[in-house]
Amino acid sequence: MLHTSEGAAMAMTDALPHRDEDTALAIRAKTEREAFGMLFDRWLPKIYGYIYRRIGHRETAEDLASRAFEKAYGAIRSFDAKKGSWSSWMYRIATNVLYDHYRSAKDVVLLEEDAAEALPSKEDLNLLVDRGFDAVRVRAAMEGMPERYKSAIALRFFEERTTEEMMEILEVKRGTLAVLMHRSLRALGRRLVERPDA
Image (cartoon, rainbow, N blue to C red; front, side, top):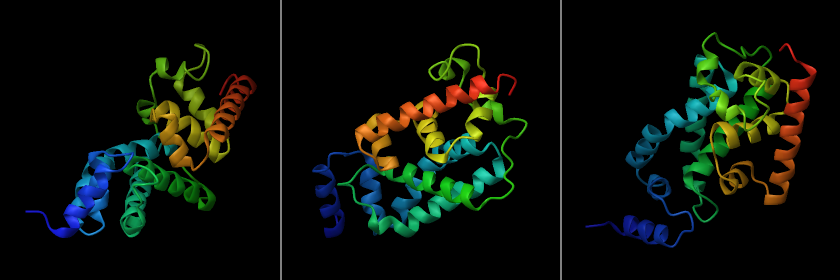
């Protein structure tokens, strides 16, 4: 038998545009610690992977992924499924943690010896650039770009988020996202041409 709060949460989830199991768990997590634990178990590898592909350093990625989940847990009562899905909300938190990290970090280790293993395949990167560029060069070129550009490229090509998810994560409208993607890819292409030996 469902408790009143559980029944209300499930009824509310049925009416949501982003109805999925994780979003339903996020609604439950507002009052049930175990539900957040389930989300943590499911999403830690994804969020860690997203951050690691941006940072390239295991320990830093682990710390930042932990920080992202601490922030999510602290803010879970403010999660509003009417505004978007759990996945978009969690990626937005992780993206903000990355922004904060880059703002405060003075000496960040950008590339570990095995970082190339975490990058997308060459075929994936061909969506970004011509066949002549490899993953290491693309990553090196991205490191000098503005954070919003790096986030847009990483979310679209590395995390394979949809346009709608990216709009939620980056908190932008469709037209703004199109401009951001265009500028991000143009900047990446320019950096790759300017640094042919990178």
